[in-house]
Each structure stands twice: as C-alpha cells, then as structure tokens.
Image (cartoon, rainbow, N blue to C red; front, top):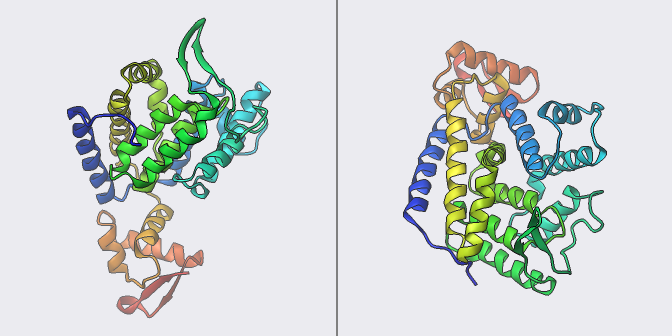
Length: 318
C-alpha cells in the first residue's frame, strides 16, 4: 500500500529547484566534491546526526577519532561516533532497497549501545518529550508487515527518488522499528536513497541543516503524524535538500586539486583511451600546462599508462 501524502505546489517547486541545482553541479563536475570538502562534510554529517540524539563530541574530536587519535569524552559518545564512522565508511556496501541491509547498518550503528542492535523491536513503545507522550508507535507485531510495505513502495513506486526518500524517512520514524537509533538510521537511509539518484548526495551534510532546524524537524514530524500523511514533512526535507545543494554551489570557486580532477575524469572516461585534449574538454577552466601537470602526476603515480609522444600521446587508466 502506498503511504499517504499529496504532491503539493511546494513539493513541485522544490523538486524543480533541486533538479536545476543538480544540473549545475553536473556541469561544473561537483558531483564528487574536492577531497578535503568530502572529508569535512562527512565529519559534519556524523557530528550533526549524533548531536541531534544528544552526543556531545565536537567536529575536532570526531576528526581526531577518524585519525585514530585518543580523546577524552564520555565512553558512550565515543562509541556512537566510532560506530557512525564505520557505517559512513562502508556506505557503498548497503542496499537502500533491502530491509536486511538496513538492519545490518543498524547493527553497526548501535553496536555496544543497545542490547540487540540490528533487531526489530517486539514490544510497544511511546516517544516522550519531557513528561509528555508525543507519539505512540505501532505495536511490535505490526513492524515487519509495515516495513515490508514500505520497502515495497520504495522498490515499485514510480515516484522520483527525491520524494520517495522523504516519504521513507518519515514513515520509518512513524513505524519506529528499533528500540533506539531510529532517527539516525532514518536520516542515513534517506541519504542512501538519494545517493542512488545522484552520487553528490553521499557528500552533502544534509544533517547539519536538520540540526540547525531541529525544532522545525520535530514539529513537522508531529504535524504529519496529526494529519495522517507525510506531505508537510516532504516539503520540509525538500527545502533542506535544496539548501544543502545551494551551499555546495556557493563553494564552487574552491580549487580542485590535480588528484580531484583526475578522479572526476576517471569516473567519466572509465576504461577508454584519451588525449590531453579530451582531458581539457572535460576540465574547461584549466590551462594546457595544468592539464599536462595533472597527467604527468597521474602517470608518475602509476594511475595512468601512456603511449606515443607529444600530439600522438594517448592515456589509459590502469
């Protein structure tokens, strides 16, 4: 059964804006942002997602853990961050269309934090804020069939991934399939669904924008619960996605390194042979001298092999 929601004018507006920005990002080869920016955004994503759940570690402390350095902090917070680092490092191993894969990710994310990580809950739970119950989740015996329906929607619906990712995120929070960790797994899974549409979403710190608007995030979750449909939550999340793409485009003047340019071109050319001129056509904003330096660097590092001299030189990625 398709989850209940409506396609509003606001949704149509943000889908159009996001599509325009994705086109701009593709045109300037930002689908895979510069190496340092990717690392910085991964740290922001981890820090923001866990801060929403009460984690106290700073981006500097998370950076230290990524670099295998010791820090002084509450043990629970350190475990949460180490688990999140592991999950985000192996993001490509998870299948966004698989319930088993989601449970596997939850097992890594919540290892050492709950009694049965990766296991669906079997008992009823209520979500509280202070002394007030804000949401009573479906009973344990309904979890498996509800998730089966949700993943079936994800696989079979003709809706675009942008909308499906928001619907999935909301419905997962409503179902609340795990005893703990539902918020972080819901946000992670939306990223995975979006990444299937465009690789740039792997490197966008969408969660830092959610953290900045945390009260709005919980407010629209509650409003959607009361209305019985996820329309308002979809509108909110599409606005967040649009803003994150806007932020990425605003830093487009960052200089790509030679390594970044070679990596982008490898994704484009794959196993085909190419010339320096082909490389220049792809990277329109660099000089011939820069192109020559990039190709020499890649050849010296055994990333490329080449044949011929001067104008007859051809390259292949090893």
